[in-house]
Amino acid sequence: MNTLSNVIDTIIFAVFFTLVGALLASSLILWFYADEKFLSVLSLAVFGALCYITFSLSNFRFKSEISELTFSVLQVIFAIFLSFIGCYAAQFTYDLAITSDSSYGVLSLIAVIFMVSQLISVFNHANKTLELFNQLSKLYKSSSTM
Image (cartoon, rainbow, N blue to C red; front, side, top):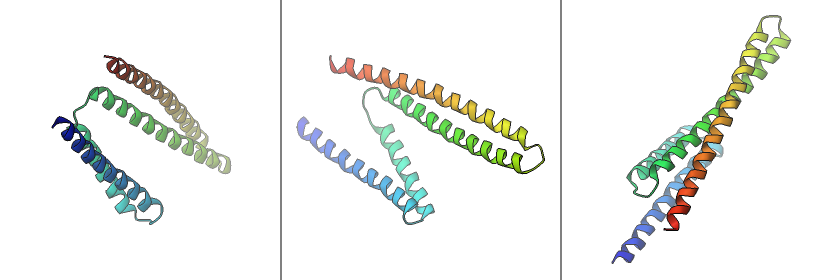
């Protein structure tokens, strides 16, 4: 009876994650090919909500470590996004400083300092993410040998 229950649970989770993957794929297709931005963001929000609900209701080993690793990856992505914004701002203010006689050079310097600080933040968060990944990998290896 236990083996049959495991097979049924595996089938249910496989179907659920297939549907969630299709939801993510449809959100990307709507965004890039159909120019339906609202529906794309809505389906992406439903995808995120379903992933969060599934993760919070699931019961498996090393859940706290996996959530910490996920949060660390999100921090890296956000820092990369901010460094791209800093790079764009530096380029934009540099172009303004060259074409005009006002004090856009100071804004360009501030944007470059912001971009460099975010790149350092990306480096620090990426190191932390790799350490967490290695720690989780060691935990899984040590638990599989028992």
